Image (tube, rainbow, N blue to C red):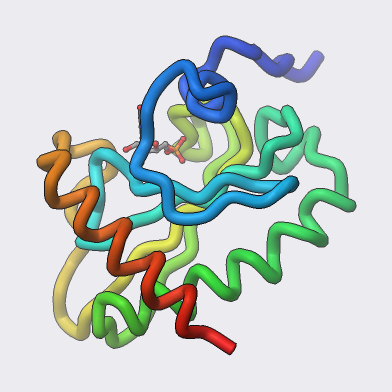
Length: 144
Ligand code: 5GP
């Protein structure tokens, strides 16, 4: 039997406003906020609001709405952080690298020859996360 969704996971708490985050964007379908342990400056998470554990139990209709948003956030992140490229990552179950069990997508600015910091390495300073969220919000607002 597959594992079930736990409504007390950390992203569910963030979605309910019980835990703060550095918010970049929000609409009816998704919340976008900075990863507290960035693998590169500007590492941001796209979190669909619909409760699902990961890709395996996600509603395809939710994915259809989230991917265009992911495209916009990746474009904004590349511009905001003057990146050479962007990695999009998405992990499923512990064996697949997942540590928070609410579906989410990572958008990570990348630079030629620069490896990523390790996954869940250490907390970034709140002021840095706030400044990076502001950069992303500005770049998003400037997109067509
Ligand atoms: P996963 O391994 O599940 O794909 O990634 C979960 C991500 O969530 C990690 O990159 C980790 O740094 C991030 N994360 C864990 N706890 C929190 C939190 O409380 N707030 C935020 N903004 N990010 C978190």
